[in-house]
Amino acid sequence: MDESSLSWEDAQTFLAVIEHNSFSAAARSLGVGQPTISRRIKNLEQTLSEQLFIRGKHGAEPTEAARHLKPAAEQMAKWAAEFGRLALHRENEVSGLVKIAAPPGVAVEQLAPFAFMLKSQEPGIRLEILSSVDHVDLTRGVADIALRAQAPNEPELFCLHEIITEQGVFASQEYVEALCQPCSWADLDWVTWSGKYQHVPPRPMLERIIPDFTPVFSSDAYLAQKVAVSAGIGAMILSKPMGLEKSELVQIDMGVELPPRKFYIVCAKSMRHVPKVKVVAQLLIRALQS
Image (cartoon, rainbow, N blue to C red; front, top):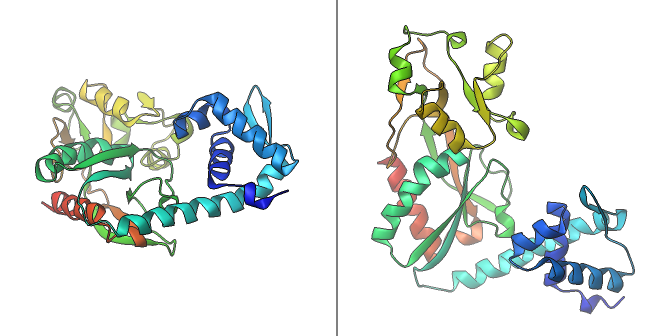
């Protein structure tokens, strides 16, 4: 094997397939056609003299050789991201694309209104919001900034700011008017997460404190939950409105204060001085504190 023939494009394609378990999903993530992905993987397998994936009805299953290569490819992704960050650090212009990763609730309630404010103050900057419950690896350049529920422990990351938000139980005005307050937890019709996100708070807490917990409505999409609550189907636990957020929902008196929730604004250490990232982070912190 000629090691010099292996490129970052090879590693990037390989990583996309192994992480998405699918040639078509990998193609979408890289913005290329599926035939391109198939050709690159075939060429890589020929170069390595190893089969890397077995295609089946469940997608592209990695072989033992692929699993062995994955850590090295992940390290190449981090080096490529670091190279890009160092190149960006040399730019002084406050313009271009900034990607922010955040949980769905934060993306909908805080970041969408923030985008409007940012456009008026920094028209040269464009925002891309990555709304996902799943973890986003900042060290690989998937996003420039992330809002996380846990403080970063990776040595390459830096916590720019800590945001503390108060939580409450909210429902529509009509739903709340029909209640006798304060309420017990079992009195309410709950809207919460479903499917592969059943582990996402607050569902585990509700399952612990309510016998035979059964939600009136559940979804793997935050916006579907919020719309259902706004329509009057039930209640859900939300962060109290802050910053630029506005809410048409009404808080329910539960007789107790819920514990506050923390969010951490995080970026790669080498990104915090990139002008466009620095400006976006500063304005975001200011908006959330206002």
